[in-house]
Image 1 (cartoon, rainbow, N blue to C red):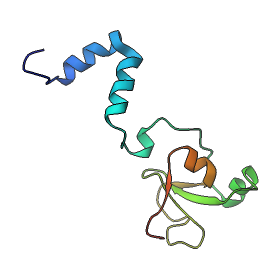
Image 2 (cartoon, rainbow, N blue to C red):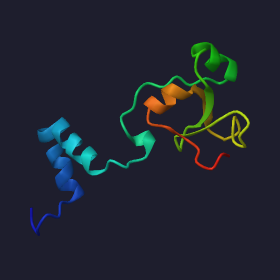
Image 3 (cartoon, helix red, strand yellow):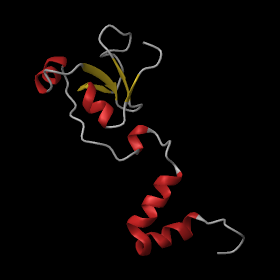
Length: 106
């Protein structure tokens, strides 16, 4: 491989067909703090309206999920239903998919 433990992207790419899933797992374990959208996640049902989401999960809280960031907001908070790219989702499904609530209450 050349110098020490340095591996080039080309070399890594050449190993993928031979190592497949095992390599994926090793790389994934090296980056446990990857953004939520990049992790393998549980299925998440997204809805264009609050009413549709509530019909899907009547016993759960509907939240507004900012899709690019994976952060959700509760009704009454500043960004609920207002981010440029988002959807109404069920809170439990969002949690299971690796999303999280806003930390600043906006």
